[in-house]
Length: 399
Image 1 (tube, rainbow, N blue to C red):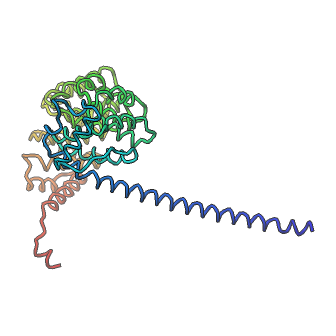
Image 2 (cartoon, rainbow, N blue to C red):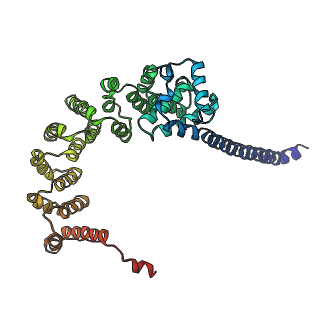
Image 3 (cartoon, rainbow, N blue to C red):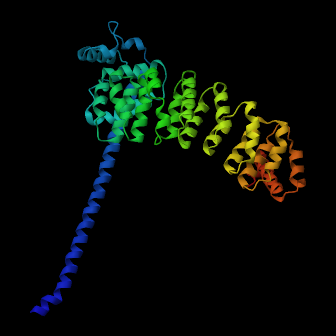
């Protein structure tokens, strides 16, 4: 009897193991179908909400702003009953579809649609959307969404309050901006500029130099939305202050690169100073990309002897951008560089020089003593001819 039990033990273990794996497989399959069903439900609900509100929002953007006025007051100053009466009156006038209070579960989808439209219109249309949102108490609901655990809903609420220019939410969004999350803090920084431009410019512009975790591409996107006339001098002052305070190389180079969206004539003396004094590779490269004064050319030409190929690469591009005939010899000498990319960019800059003709360029490609120089000139010349070549329509039709 003992032997029978011992003999059957592995079979029993195997049987229960199989049952367990089958049960787990059924649970996983069921969970997968549950997720797909939930995703389909949310997608259908979003489409239904968009269909419900799209006509209304589009109509609101084209009506006169005066129709959102009542007794000389702005919509956000009206009482709840006055807001309700105003919306009912506009509906009776045939301005847009009947509007019901927005349920909490529909609010994120509505705000997504509202923000998307808000980002694509200008002037009075933005004001109309803001008036409608205030009449629907979106500002209060969005304020509560700031406490959401969902990162998506938090960003949606921040962007909404920024577009609404909701001054009462400034301090709350400011605290979020000072947080450690790089994504949500950057969205909060953008919203603060929309709520109070002057205050944010004075208090928080320096964050772009201090926050190493912020995306430079997103920072540039935000800065491009601002008035370049108003941010040029503050940005220049920020770069100068960062340089004097010996900001780390990576962040200083990023901060310098933001000057590309300002009026460069105002910053050329600062760029020249940093380019002349600094020995940091990334900082030098950032300055070379922005050089627009011939005063800096002696320093630029000097850097062609740098040991770092990244610097030499940017030097030949900068020299090519100025297009001075006397720099042709420098570019021709750069064709002998040990780094392929430096030779390639030098050849590209050389063929784009105003004083360089295609015949002379082709002659150089056969007469230069260095084989690497001749090869790179042949390659660039072939690329230029390929880009300029247009295939006849007859050959296309004959295929």
